[in-house]
Length: 296
Image 1 (cartoon, rainbow, N blue to C red):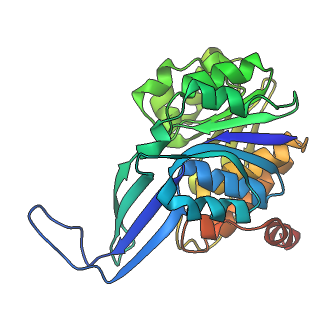
Image 2: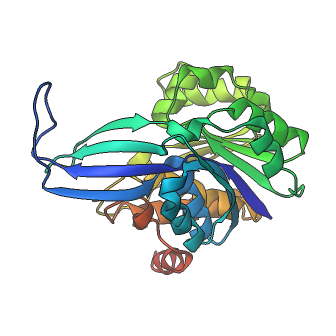
């Protein structure tokens, strides 16, 4: 069983600054890092570290091929990560001493996926495989439609949330994974119980995962609602918490773990991730998660 992830690959340029740059101002940065990022790449790394077979489908500029090698070293099949003449997707991130950030995001090569790319990536799938995608690439509607034509189960994480998400063929989605803000935007409701009522009425075909930060997670299945609390840890950086959760949950769930076990495992992985600084580098491996759970 494999997860085919049609996902973004971003290059994160991170600058430590005393304050966010103002119009007309030039300031010096005290520290700089260039890191692999993007929700798609982070979720693929989480899936791989959780023990899943992962095939990533995406685009990157040929000058950034070293980041593709980083993904391969993490155990990800990157046969369908192809090079583009367009600049790679990237983010310019300012970080202040108080850990606040300001981000400028450029989609770049992430928005160059073609129908041919999609069909080629789905050529050799098996009926037990899953497709995963987020909202940082183009042609999402075609990914959803073609995956369902192949009889695959589809997980969708509509982040970052945009109005276009509401017009996607949601009947093709088997598992919708949202945070509380995204759930509010899709449903038009503020109260969690009303959000649940909306999804049960308008998305009866899908299972819904709503992550609630420190409050844990709620899963809506056809016959029941499952609430799992978050683990209490001292968080230092929440950057990759959501991506870690998604990767670990889908890894366990697609390998036939029961819902509550998969949710608890994902919460544990997410708890470990927020205890470290960084995105991809903060995602724990399977052994770390096993040790953490054994102590609970």
